[in-house]
Image (tube, rainbow, N blue to C red):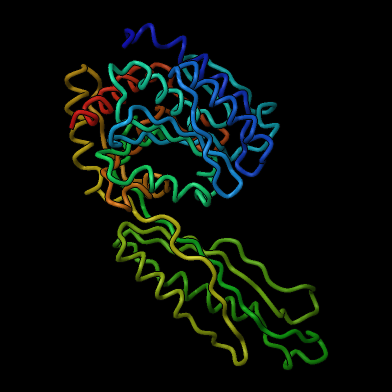
Length: 369
């Protein structure tokens, strides 16, 4: 691999290329352009064209190296939460060692780190690099592909952004998402409200019941979020809906909350409930990452890099899926920085070459294991 000082110009040029190609998850045309930019960059750095894997109308990119059994999966995504035009208000820029731009830390810099790490390996046999385009939506079309590629691997290395201070993400909460719908009955709010079944009142009961399912002692959050009901100010609402975000540390809690949500019953006579959704991502529990984290600590010492710290986070990633099928998984191996999904999204430039060296060493050791 190149010396650390020699890596930086290429890293920065590649990150700029990806950041300047906006790629919101909900814009098919933008994603198609970004897919081609990522594919071309990968071909230049890795010397091979990717396979284009179509799932549910979306195209994901896969590089498979060697013909033997799959040993290591390196995982990332190029879609972002930022709409087209964000570059006008949040332009790509580097100032005082801080790189800014939409999607830079989540996770275009991580993709570039992965490609540079792989490019410097003495052997890639048994390695797969998978780059998806719907992670920010919950991976609706790529989940099965991610799980299939991870099955049987010795390691899944996820190039999502690092945690605070460059921490590796050794635990992620599982995610469940629900929509609880209430079906009531409309009536005139002034003339005969008693003939109606008020969906807003029923929703109020259900919101309180949902919030009560949280268990702070176990790290379980149950958060009612978006709520809608009614059609006009003088009509008893006939329908309403509340969205619910659930985060859990272990599968037992995910199952407990799921059963409780599905067991909800209406309190108002003649009201009816409908529960949509369910578990979206299983938790990435500490046991899935422990061995790989210990390996990262030992390799950092050997390479003279800062000793990694560990972070448990509430947000999910595709690492939840790889851990959920039993593949050892280490997340947060991407860029050091902060502000994901926020106006201050940024990458610390000085940490980029160090991250490349660590990721390369982890891949090389996992391929030999």
